[in-house]
Length: 447
Image 1 (cartoon, helix red, strand yellow):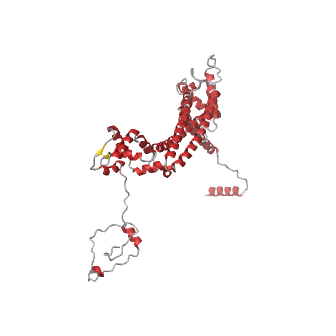
Image 2: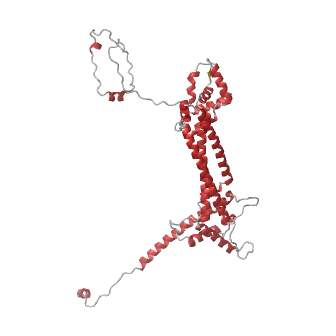
Image 3: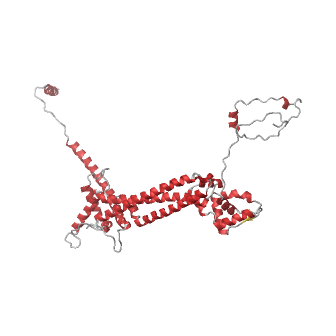
């Protein structure tokens, strides 16, 4: 402690608000002054006092990354090594990132996207310094002492100082893309498989198709080329709405729905009535699917996974012990899981293909001329139009039947009430009730 200061130092538990005064120190302790004689009371509850008068901690609002390079370059000779367009693109990226370089390094080294999201990692990876650019930057930093790099150049140089940034970033980006890609493929395969199974196995679908066949055969009775059919091509299903009745009031699809609900659905008009066909939305999604495209997607995912495995090996072999984990552990676990997911997707693909082609064979359909297989897009689009037409009318007619049942119930209740008559009983002669009645009658006649 400084010997010139008489009093011991006070060390609060937290930074306190400053009191801006001018300090006075007495040199002669024997002098009769206020400062020599005054006594300072001991603060009893220092915790409370410190809480009340502690310095307010202002949460630092992070500035755009571009601002981090300004002070270093101010009033210095600025060196520009990038061409105009490249410099502008990097500058725009820097201004959009409210981060610090240490945040980016932490995210890349630990595979933690809580502060720096994947979209940002992707943007950084896409705009990273290229080999020729980094070589220029390296040479400049090694040979020049007085001149300072422009902000975009500084940014690219510091980004390149993150250990194995390109390899690590590409692995992180691929991990997300792979998961999204596999999930997307699995969802498509699941929809195609479910819709195919529904059309193949549901008895209600067979009832609807049987009804269309019966009505069609009846309409085509006596025609040698169209009558007495055992089945029909699906192309007719979306066209049933165009076949109008004689008075033009309803279409054939209207009649099919009416007949189905009033004769084949025992729960029609109630909440238990179930739509007999697959949901139109699911069928539409199935119509957007192609087995050929899915095979290509899975092959590409396998190729990309192989590239990722090679990148992981390169990063791990060149990484220092300090920066090896958790990258190595997390990426090896991801690669193991990725191979399992690809196997699952392969199994799903085989199942979906089997169910679809079983359905096509079940319906006795043949591919278009010049095609080896039935196209999923064409097949399911026909079903989508038919299911959409059917459901619109099915919902409307179900409401009508429900109203009819309600009216019938109300009429039945009124009929039961109207049929009830007041029950009268005969009076037994010489009974108490008969004598009272006679007495009442005689009194009335006397009066």
